[in-house]
Length: 117
Image (cartoon, rainbow, N blue to C red; front, side):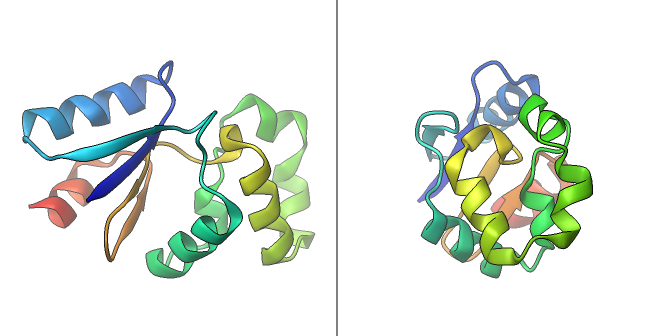
């Protein structure tokens, strides 16, 4: 089963969910603000994704900007970055889609089509 972490006020998340519904793809929906992934899950998703950890951060979000993370991340360990992501779901790039053997950050229709078709 696919798990999708979204934020209801995010237009990209709404677009992604609409796309999934139109394709009749079943998923479990989790609110990224209240049901965000824990540290262990984030570590697993990061390792499965093959992406740089920075791709898991919502770089356009208010919390990211207020914390000045664009300057701080390069000096932080992966462990510290994972702990930070796990502490606040609003720091996590969304939507975050976790499948059995893959993870996607953000909604790029071509990537989603490739993994889910």
